[in-house]
Image (cartoon, rainbow, N blue to C red):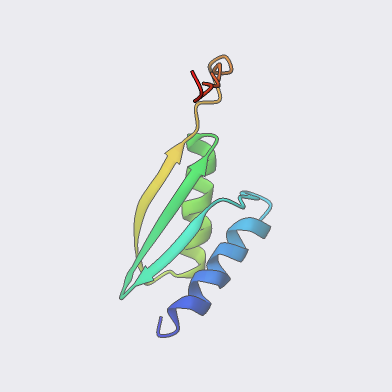
Length: 86
């Protein structure tokens, strides 16, 4: 994993294009033999699929999972806009 930037982009593209994942918001960062996987996914199944794709791309690497699960199960959260002139 010498050219980390190229490797990062290659794995991110694999995650984005793989039919099991189709995740555009996942970021990969290679540091020595470790691969940090960051971003937000909709479910545990999607997380597992992303980690599988990363492992297929870099089978010798230690994968560090920093993926977050989005809260897609609850009602939409209300956003309050505050007027700073008050």
